[in-house]
Length: 148
Image (cartoon, rainbow, N blue to C red; front, side):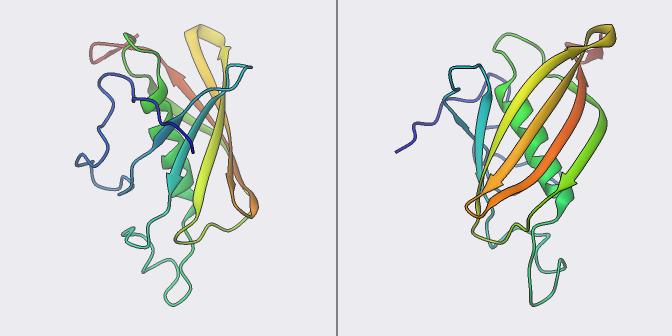
């Protein structure tokens, strides 16, 4: 049985209202492995508001929602005491397998510093059937509501 860690201070609480377009489920933070990689978990609920239209009678979780899952994972796992990182670019996405209602997803997230104080986040998302997506996002640090 996995033990979920507490999200960083300031991260949305599980079950807390989210802004329009955000996923309805909560991102669980799993213990990091020995190489410092961050790991999160998310279960695709059959109640996700995007599913009825994507596609009627054969729901598939949209790729943009996988990008949202990675972004919410980043916000939940940013170091305590640090202001939340600001997303500045979706550098690449590759969707490699379908994701269906009821699928439990895990994301392994690696960070790499890049030019000008920015950070690159590389995430590999998997379901019980195997690889689902690779996502690369770029962030910069923020300071109390202002960009650094």
